[in-house]
Image (cartoon, rainbow over all chains, first blue to last red; front, side, top):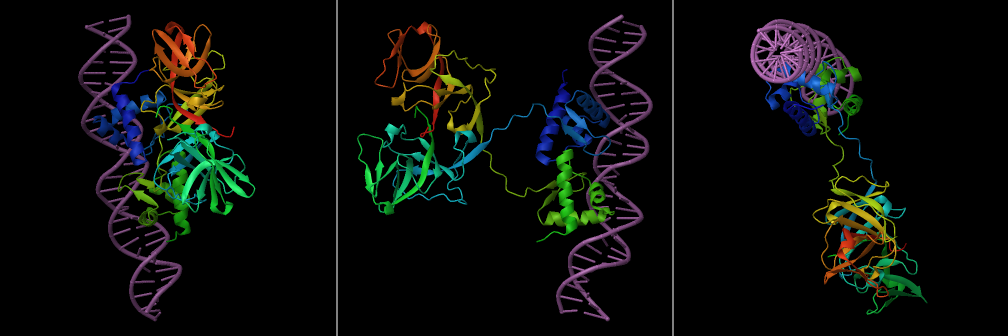
Length: 214
Length: 214
DNA sequence: ATTATAAACGAACAGTTGTTCTGTGTCAAT
DNA sequence: ATTGACACAGAACAACTGTTCGTTTATAAT
């Protein structure tokens, strides 16, 4: 069942007007917008649109028009917003996200929640600079999504803050004989040995996102 | 600045009424609901609510009331929904997404649009099985987001359908001396050489998503 | 006790709003 | 040529709607 040009224009106007003003237009506002001088003609066309199921009307009250949804509701996908806090292993100090941190900078990415571990609290992202982790299949330019942690298990991929060097780095974490070994995943690079007191674990990698052609 | 009980009741009614009817109430409908018999009193209270920033009023028109959002609107992030069509290099036939394909299976992921290339049409995802691409830092279990392509450039990471083998595989694509070379990124594996007529390029990898601890 | 302000109230009014009535024009079918 | 359906148009009307006016009551401050 097709619409005339005028009827389509009326629908478009109702949608645009309602979106802007948060209330529907009157008969006269519709008429004015689509060039119909007679309220009777607007009323006639609205009755047709109602009969066809495009709108619903509440009788005799002002602005008693509502659009009928035209497409079935898209099923919602639960997503999570993740602040991208900066870059890692670039030697710059980097703030640790807290439970009430504000988003620094304004870059945020949004992902399907199911891509993250069960606990998606305290999640942030960093962009990797450098190739120290290529054997862990994390390369320069990758985005790593991290979950804030203060403790690490052996073998975890973590971001750690080295207090004496005042820099953050991404490495595999091992605690051996009272010392921390931060192991690159690149055979050309040496591990870092550090006093546990000098190491502050900030987060554990839970997801890696890469553009393979960049 | 506090609200009287009556003013709170008016706000609650406006919110409930608007949610239900999709248009705001009139002065008289408000009065009837909160037990105010005089339109002047309703008008007085609405003016107070407007002054305090709870509502906005469009003057002298019917139903010219709108609620002012009580929390700042979360800035929208444009996202893209990507169907996950299955697994690749598992030897099973895999349908090619077309411009009007339906989502097979019901797994869909949603990502920030800016993570994808400029043209995000005809995008789908596959989960990788196998380690043939570890030197391209794509491992078993990774999700690769692909853009439908029918042609590949040398060096592109692509999914190709091998007609004679009836299987899809993920490899780097090279066209050399009239032959297609599909190059694994794993030094322990041999490239596949194929007649171009036997090879159907399906898509090019534009993003890789990995859980590093799975 | 007095004053100022807030809150309330009914009535009246002007303008808005949707519906109905009567009539005309166009087009397709017969 | 006639008929019926559709679309249109202006006018009139009743009811709706928001604003203003004049007044009263309650409360707090002085």
